[in-house]
Picture 1 (cartoon, rainbow, N blue to C red):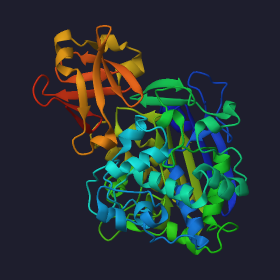
Picture 2: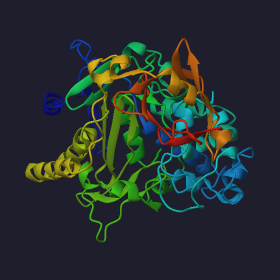
Picture 3: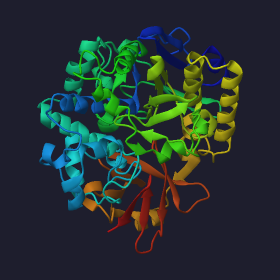
Length: 492
């Protein structure tokens, strides 16, 4: 751990290791706040755990299954009557199991824009709006990672329990397990002094520290609201307790170990993680091997030095959570970094994955030479992947936006001003507007309005403060189209 702090620019890590049903490590390394060596990470430092939140939602659905209030194969519609899809066949037959296993009509990260841009004020509003969203896949087509699956499950949980998902998870798991520093969102922390700061890294550069409660650069959806897909905060001390709970198959809360066994059984082939398995430190062989996903877990299979294994990662704009569990050895590792790669090399992006795999291997008594070979192979595999892009000069060097671009010329503004809509799902994505104000061009989407700059040496790429680049095609022709972080909006 200390070596990685010296080698890389991540300011701080937290690590917990449960082995043979005992917490053998729960410790912080480095600093919570870049540039402040006295503000150290401890076992009680609170981090955003990102999509590891989904595991708690899956466990909550599992609790209702355990109590015979639900079944895995119940249709979503039968358990959330107001739920709807444009695809009425999918609306009728999509099951809780489909959502839990990421085997639904949603494509990879489809629909994410509306919550990352705060288009809807609440999770319920966003899920209700899915009634106007044209999905792109048939029913049960195979694995694709989509946060919307777990946003829907969060609403199922609230409807079935008549309380918020965060309150239910707290009463059912956090409180009984003694996880006193775990909360549904950053703003709920009762000890904000325990919160880490967030950071971004790129090719040896660090941006931040960012206050997780107030900084728009790293804010989660609804400006740090509740997201059942990823807003939980926790500590490695708390997560060690949770690791023991998982490794003990839910003893004390579930009536049968079969419930957790179902969660950690492969339910669908995970083609996404299989494509970069070596770069993340898995020992997976596609010739006869299987890398699957469970319910609330990304990876399930014999992919860690021949051992049966499962994990669930989590990422936010300013943190990275990785874990790994080997149930036959009663081993659970949780690693959290208070930084997220933004541009640069895949080698840096996948650092927490490699570290997790190395630490798991250590506790499996793998020879250090073998672990180093696996680590080096992972670095080589990541190096061969296409770069993530150049380091953003505004974020990492503080270059003012007006130096990276220039005011959009008035003639171009006149061509661009107007209302834009997504052709496939206009009601779901709502309208986007380009308008002029005080001689400048602004983009308004959801509740946010930002000045637009023309990127130097480009007639089609534009810049938004704190949001990044976006492209506009066919300026001045019909129809002008905005590509806004993968979603297309056409001038109407």
